[in-house]
Length: 260
Image 1 (tube, helix red, strand yellow):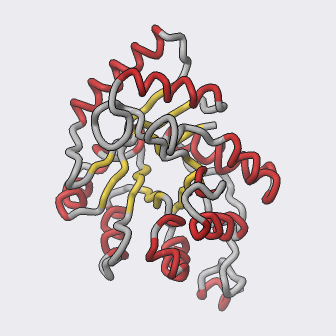
Image 2 (cartoon, rainbow, N blue to C red; image 1 turned 90 degrees about the vertical axis):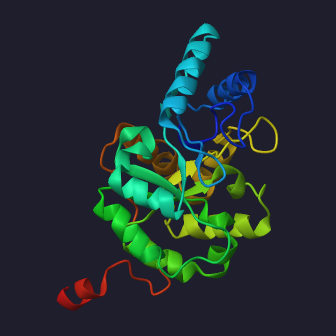
């Protein structure tokens, strides 16, 4: 499995506090069946995003993993918050924030008060050459109440990542139900850990992956846990996706219906 959302680098945000914890998290991830991790510290007004510091941290961690015989493949990226300065800088330097210096960008929305200008922001980021991946919408209180807006974004090309722990109910019943609604509708492209520590938010996906396989099919579980995230990790086009199901029972744009 490939994990594209993981706060593994030590001392950068609210994830791993030190190198020892990062090594233990890496060992746990590998034991769970995760082979590749994109290290995604927050890039926000609260946590400064410094590529040179991230490069230093990831080099140190890679060396430590070699020393500990933990064959986990690492790449860097960020958990991108949509602040004004971030957006302006990402448009000017798109691969500064992207996952493994590819065209894929992991974005996190505020919990409340989603701006009416989000669609324009998404458009500008796409215009800069970025493919957007929305992180954990099932945990966003605004989107929990309004699936229609998420449907609009999906139709416009948004990719969706949900949290493995949400699928298992560890983020509450509302997040669990929405996770399964999204999975059943084939609105999910990635399962990821969003790991922060060894206990409350651990780097584990296998149990959630098995539940997805049981309820929605092994091929879909493989798609969201391995095939799609591998494409992102390597900066490749996404493989063929399952057709999403919308409330109007149509995944086709209106113009396709007319000319069908």
